Image (tube, rainbow, N blue to C red):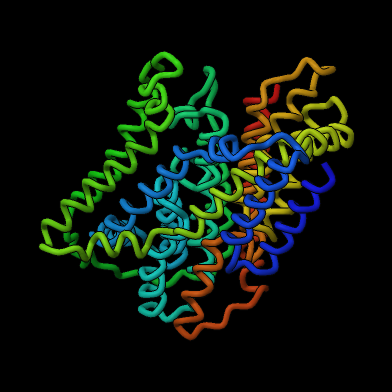
Length: 440
């Protein structure tokens, strides 16, 4: 177990130090785990490593990214934002509504993509009203991070949870006869509205917005809606017999839906333009780093599981919290918030999901308990914890990068002034909701 743990710790340290090389570090560690498995350090083979990769998750992420590229190019998000802004009385409400709009988009679109599509609108409004765009874009970024946990397709961490725990799109709304994590996120969003209104309480200048953006194509919007509808319908499909080709396809159904709609959208756009520009654009915007990182992490997690590291960490959590579900849940949520403020939540969640399963199995004197309360607590803490600091989430880094490219100076204090109260309002609300619904 010690060699596997050392490799894992070194991998994490290198990823924190050399963030631009994270995919290659993870893939290198994965290769090392395979070599150790073949050498007999623990039981792991090349076939088991390849089986550990969740291809359904990769297909979902890749397909959704492609559709998002087409959606942004259609200019529909910009038009929707303008339509919202024509209905607000002043800057305070304009910033709040724009942040909420980014959150709604982010429930179905990757957080970074959401910031990229909404940030230009925030910049334009700030210039027009002669206010600093710094707090506006920070509000957009933190709101995007919040809503990413609301649905199965809202964030990579949600897709990871869905793939690991076998959750479908509807499970994020209702599962086992109970309201899902979606409502906890939305209650957190309501709490964050109060925070934003208080933070921007002095910005009472009038807003005079117009709906000027023209949507170039409505098909990408239909594809976005189609993804949601088909994922819901696919959740009702009965599972075929195990060991058959149909069963394999059934396990990939969510990813195949996202990929198929992406292909339809790209082929149509290429035919419409009479060239391959749309295909090149989709490939160019594809977040290959995240896909490669996940491939490596899936294999690494299989390796540390085979080596017994996951069980040891689960036992450590159990030793600290004891056989007390509430104490363990609290520890998990707030440890996740603290860690995710400084490290990327994708590798953290991927690593912790099997740990959470192990912890749940130790509860009730070894009889075990339903792990869902811990899954939702992990997702809440890890997703929202990134809002505490400027480096805690990719959306934050993206927003700050946009501001700096536009000649704005962004200090850590600028971010903390919004990120800290926003995070604690949303986390505490979601924390209480999840325990009331799933923990008692």
